[in-house]
Image 1 (tube, rainbow, N blue to C red):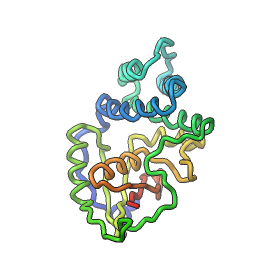
Image 2: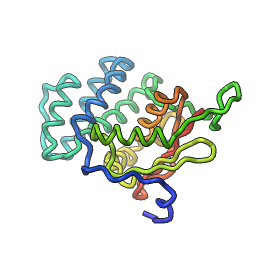
Image 3: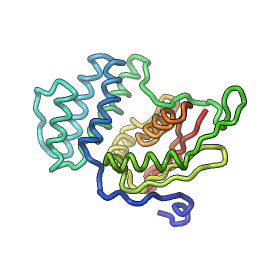
Image 4: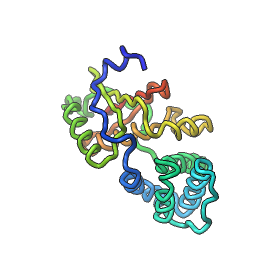
Length: 234
């Protein structure tokens, strides 16, 4: 990575582990998947399980069982394969991307976080008042929480911008492998054509929770080998 580029970011200390805890990460992922199931109905679950099993089968070279019918059964099976594929959560993420693409095409529905498109990107509320958000404090607390839960990537940094946005840098995101595959399969495009990012989406959800404002994101750089995502209020 370009040393000049990374020097402009505040880098957190490296996490005391190489990969996040797969069980803790999977429990966090399951919350969103259950909402997707509510949105799309039984067809989501069927396709989601199918794509997740296909992904893990390619990675470990094993034929998965045919009796997996629920998210809990899928999670149990994926976690049982961590000795062969250390982060089976990638199977969850790939299945989500692929299933959403298929169902959006059929129904026109969209499960999305912050895909509002061309909204105002300056830091003011609708009545013109300036928004005061301490992003340094938010990121510090988020980092501490994510480390404690073993959910944070090993390396992570950020910088704040004058317009109130925040740039997140991931030197080696643990989702990179699945993002590469999804990118090659043309699955990473959001409805408005911008690129999807799991970390950007998650960060926007967290920012919305702690600030009360809506957040969106743009992927500025992907696999260079780092990724940079900009999060902003609107």
